[in-house]
Image (tube, rainbow, N blue to C red; front, top):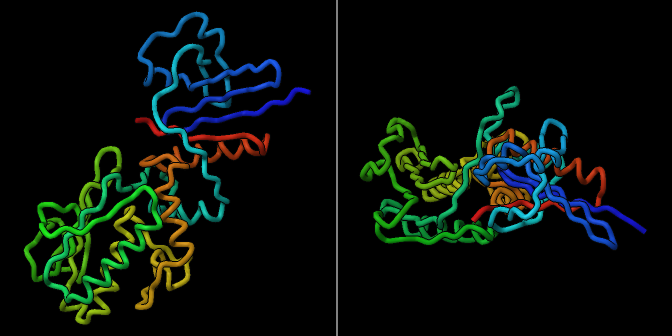
Length: 292
């Protein structure tokens, strides 16, 4: 008895479709024409054009002896539409009435190296370190360490009375942060400035540092669709905690079951393709390719 399974390989620029039959096994893998030109830098032959497959708006080129791009293959991580709605709003800073899909997700690739100035009490520093480490422990692909020298850091926590470590932060604000990222949307540097006159107690200072820390992990936007105790909630609360949904969103943002640093259009398009494959056959397998 014959059967067909399909494997979809996804990344920011590449996917392929494989069809397999039992006895004999035949495998066909395809790549979009636009991706071929970016990856292989070689002209297509007449035989290549004879094997073109039209899938929606894509023209697919069949791979024969050409090797696939080097990299790690990670299973696609399925999420329902409700979760994805939350995620796209916070990770892509999506506005409810926005039709712009060019926004990109930001993430850390290198470990966070955190420097805290001496403007904060020992209790604030200890409690923040405990919170930061416990948060990062939920994220497999991210690491954190605390350093004693500012020149060893890429993440700075300072007060309005300190040296101005980040000139782009508005000194008139009660507190603020600023981050830098690369062309591939990897966050490279972050600084938060806490106004210790406005946030006059250890509890208030710690709350503000924790809030900015969570936002720093992906240039996340807060929204009004979460309970007030969530760090992703727009609600102003002194009793915030890392909820189970907060943790799930952070883990997903750093999961290799999605493409990193992509724009919203690509993100949504990949999910659309993957979910269509699952609709056609729940046994289909999808993988992301993360190039080396």
